[in-house]
Image 1 (cartoon, rainbow, N blue to C red):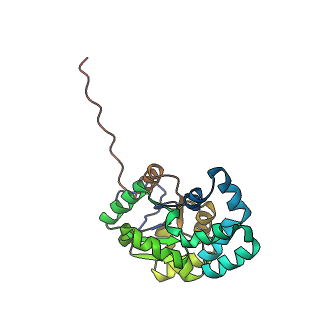
Image 2: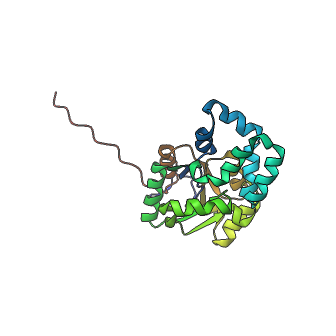
Image 3: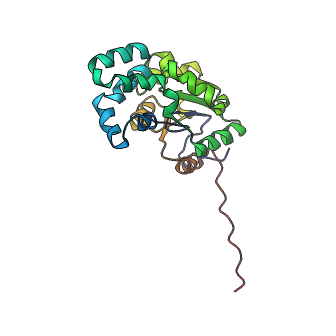
Length: 221
């Protein structure tokens, strides 16, 4: 591990969010198969998808959630029922550049954990789909804990279960609210944007070694 820049903490544990960081999860992948693409955003807004999904990330049952939502939106029954039934279609595959970084950290002997907002029911699908999840020393799944980010309790679960020093723990997450909540808990946290930017941030923190710039061919002209 390279030395951190001046003023940076020494990171001993790196914690990854999963959806949007290592796995291309997006309900739009599914709904673009089921309706005209230009209607998807309006549909997701209409049924309040973000809040509905978050409730299951926090431990709710999909059977109960679907039944309640169909009552509120009976004309959308088939589309609502499709989400848990066809969850696999919401997964666009691994985010290759980030998976490469994960593998590099694993090879360097860095302790790796995951902290994900994910329904316990649907996480089983992702768990069987992506072999790189085996690189983690532990995965804290919100649906199993019945509490989801950015609730401060889930950060305490992470820290206590794995006996972590918050000041030497780095969280990588794509949601600003989760990054802010982690920092409030004393955890070093950075917002994920893309693999290239993540590599720059990890180099700056001393978690990855600097990437050597390619040597330009010498000109004898």
